[in-house]
Length: 164
Image 1 (spheres, rainbow, N blue to C red):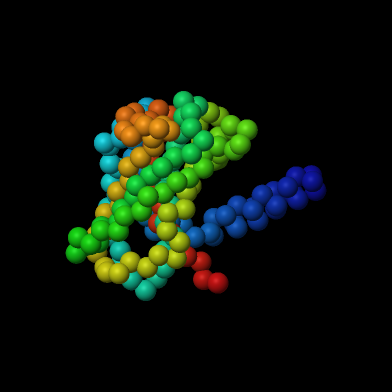
Image 2 (cartoon, rainbow, N blue to C red):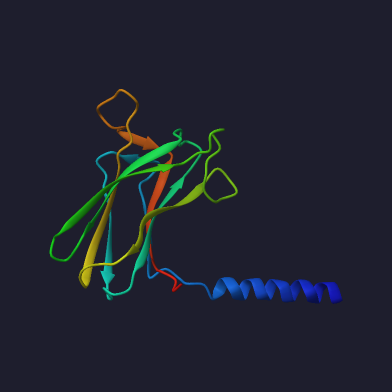
């Protein structure tokens, strides 16, 4: 009985620690089907209510065992209410050198939380549009991969930075 009580207390403490953590101020996933077409732009609308607070932003990718590359290139943009657009070309490592897919998950489906912006301050209040598109190409080819197999969902998380 004492062993079960100790286990219950430890479980309760761990649960309380995770439950009190910072939650995203915005999180959303959008399905791209079983493959992400090179012309498909995934768009997220995010309402900024504080320009003094820094945010961390993450791009979230859900992949399955059909994803055959060790990296991915993405083009991401942030459009402010005054139509000012900031564009980034990003590369992320998706697999370890031995070919094992990175990310969390116990099956063939992996969730990857990828840094997009760290301590980012929005310049104005209002609706911002974040757009993401895949830009993966095979070596020595000009055209991008038309259908990127194995990417099923694209997401965005916006979190308040933790005070240090």
